Length: 336
Image (cartoon, rainbow, N blue to C red; front, top):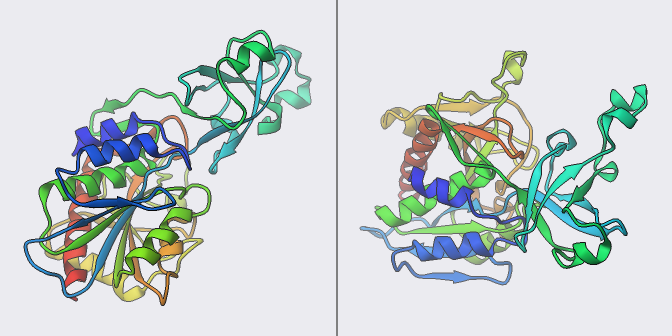
């Protein structure tokens, strides 16, 4: 499964540009039936060894954060805005790769030309540009067009038990679901690989309406602030302590019975689990749980440091624990 994660992270796919990720997943489905809806969501219905009492949907999003070109200046530099929530601090000096294959670097005014006040202030996206190596608008337009998107360039790297890469959010969830499909499931299950989560949970609302599940398990990567200087109560979750399960975030108040059920299932199956201990962020559960007449929904997270950057870091063991928890919770919901 970790090899699948590597391959998925190395693909490029900002919100609305998930085709390469979707095509790769389709190529690995081993013949499982699927459909692609108008939003680009990939919906895979997998027959289990036994029929399920309830319809269970597992979902993860295919898109990653990035940037989109908004204007090409006369000197060949490119103005841009972000696709998804990105802290401007992680953009400075980063290499990005456009859909065309063109590579650029995000630049700002040189420190030598900044006044004292500017040196101590973090530049915003409007003050930044992308340098493609072009000397004019005409040269730049041979490389990209306004409306083209770009992602961080990042080498997938193993650091002991840790993994470093772009797009762990949420290729980790995609890898878990793809592995479950390939390995087979006990009960009939619907897997949804969703689009456009990073720009407003858009694809998942459509796929959940289409599937109309009784229960949903959202697989995500979530912020881990378990670093030096972070107060214990603000660490959110900790790498190496297993899958993190949410009780509330900015998009969903989770069913307390399902939250407790997740910990009971983990205890029964010797799976490492932890709560996500801050009310922050949001994910596809925010649209899934409100679909149609409502869907009982839970989120299983892979803890991830430096999320929405070129250098996300997760623990490979947490990915494996999340995979096991997702499988067992799905089975429990199927026969609830």
